[in-house]
Image (cartoon, rainbow, N blue to C red; front, side, top):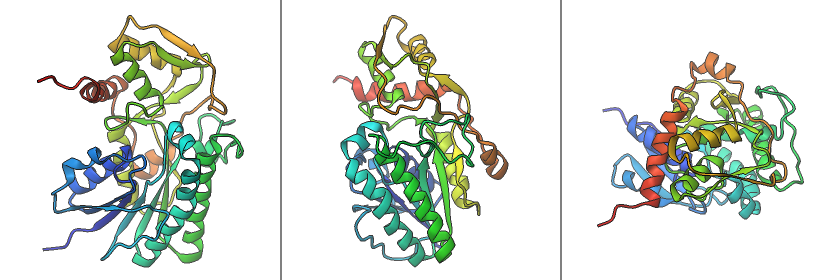
Length: 318
C-alpha cells in the first residue's frame, strides 16, 4: 500500500489552518499541525485528535523547526491575522513573517517540499487600483499601526521568491482576501464576527466611518478549495483568492440586520487609522490557472457562521 503524502501546516490550530488540516486529512494526507497557540485554539482541532493521519507539534515557528521523516508540502499560515491580534502582538507578527518564514523555507529546502506562503490582500495596503490584480505593488504605510502585518507579509513574499530563485525551492504564494466562517473567534475584531456577535447579543452593529469602505467576503470552504488546488498545482503565484462580489460595510451591516436582527440599530464610530477604503480581488488568474471561483452565496455562508456563533454564545442548557 502506498504511503500517504505528508503535509506540515504552520498555524494549523487557527481559523484557516484548522480547516486546511481537516481538508488534507479528509483527502488522505498525513498532516502535522504546528502551532504555538498564541492565537490558535486547541478546540479547532480537537475533533482530529486520535486520527492516525493527524499529529500536533506545539512549536513557535520562529524557533528551530524539527520534523522527523519526509514532508511533501508545507503550508505556512502561522501569523496573527486580525487587526486585534497583530496590534496586540506587533513584534511576534513581524517575527513570524520574517524569522518564521525563513525557518519554514529552510525546512522546505531541506525536505525538498513544496511550500505555500499564506500572504494577504493587506500587501495592497489602501489601494489606488481597484479591483486589485496580482501585478499591483500596493500602497502601504510602513510606519502605521497596521504596518507590522502588511510589511511582515510583503517581506515574507520577498523571502519566498528569493528562496525560489536562489535555492530552487518549489514555492507558491496565495494572497487571501476577507474570509469568514465557523471557527472565527467571537472577539476576532473583524467585521463578520463583530456583526454576528452583536446581532446575537442584541447590541447595535458597529460601523466605522460612514460605512462606505468596501469589502469582499469569501466563505472558508471556498477558500480552502482554492488553496488545495494551488498547493497541488505547479503555479508559483502570487494568486489572489477571494470573492470578487463587493459590498460596502454599511451594506453588509444591513444584510446582517435583515437576516438575524431587523430591530438593531447601527452605531457609527470613527474610522481606524489606515483602514483600507476598498478591498476587492481580481481573480482572473485563479479562474484561468486553477479553474477556481467562489461557490457559496453570502446568505448561505452567513447562516452557517451564525449557527456556529450561536453554539458558542448561547450553549445548550441542561
